Length: 623
Image 1 (cartoon, rainbow, N blue to C red):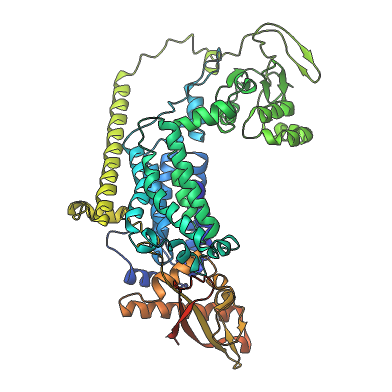
Image 2: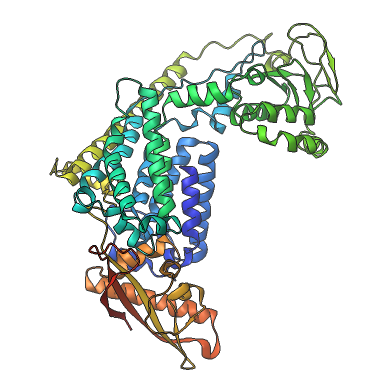
């Protein structure tokens, strides 16, 4: 979800000024007039200045990076949810259904123990546990986790497909099988060449329609099979990911495919990670018999060793403290052959043992001198270590490698400072009891909130399907609106649209020249196209620039009610267009007037010709 958030930020940042500031197409006053609800909140309403908005985007990116590496995982996930929700509320006209799943998944993720594995939090916990140098084996959290929050995540993801199946009640999905063909008719959404290829074959379109529609229902059952539970769940996840990958391959759906795939991957069971990933790809002799040594006097060295152990996926390696003497190596490891390696050679060994970095072993071997220099600069503050203990007491010499006689690992820092000679402190039972009570209360609060989310998922989606008409209780609806847990999964439901549209911006410059500003995105780039009449642009998708702009024209600009809000929206777009175009063009090349024409086409289901459609006429939306 962190990568999804970063991708979403990068996608939205391209139109930061146009979509999220008072100088763009949706000033804050217009957002409050058109879409705002009293229970909503958004940090982006602090200011409409582009610099403040850019700062908010940057802060969101920092939080997402913190979530990506797992530093303060739960807090980072919750803050990412707050900023993503605020960004979506700032301009909901550019949103799509993937944004709903994105924000709900982040909210549920803040209730899950995301930092227990492969994260900075896990590495810091490993360091704070003080693993004994006698064995060096860290204790890892249980691979299985089940509570109300994990149930809420699974039910939320599956509710997307289950309710979407029942919302698709049109004949195009259930009888004629033309839904895929109709979806590919939309010029902006169709992604060539695969989209063009499928559109030209109606029989394949019918097969894909039935496959997608049936899998949205049948795929849910693989997550509840009482037998072959692990393989069944993996098969279900692979099926949904393959479905979204195919949709994203043929259709321009923006972040939708990426968001849904990332949410579905959260349903991978422990069977996948233990039996497939760990036992088949991670666990081997070169990784299980591997020891990483760190300077016992250097806390940062201990932290680095724990980070290497955690992020490079060496779960069964050992971490052992040793003292270093002046002039000793900065990094020391012992590999599965009982060979002691130092500095750059040790880094190469870590790369070779890591299932993540082993493809870079050859490159690391060629860069050993720069690695030595980098280690000397980065770890110059550390003390040097004594010879390493050989577990079996034997010494061996190999080319470029050496092992030495057995010895004892370094004592822990507290022992060397004489802590063992001092009288131990009596156990603080009162503080421990308070801590346990606080943790239990916090756990109960988290579970209660997760149960509330589960309740909203069931009742809200049940109300959408007509199975539970009253929906959530009235007293809880303010919380639903504030947290944005309201949802509707109706992509291409009950059927894909048969009518498609594009625009022509007939414009006049100060020198009297007529130009066109919609074709090739001229109204955004400030580069006009010659006026050639009202013919359809050869590539309509280029005119919309991206999926966010397409949703703006589709959701808000066409026929938004009431009429006063629609007028203000078109006025805001006109002001932004004139201001940005005239800023990019000077003299007699400035924009004097423009007129927006709406053109429509309708699919011809009689001939099933995907590239010849019936015109539905045109009208002037603004002048």
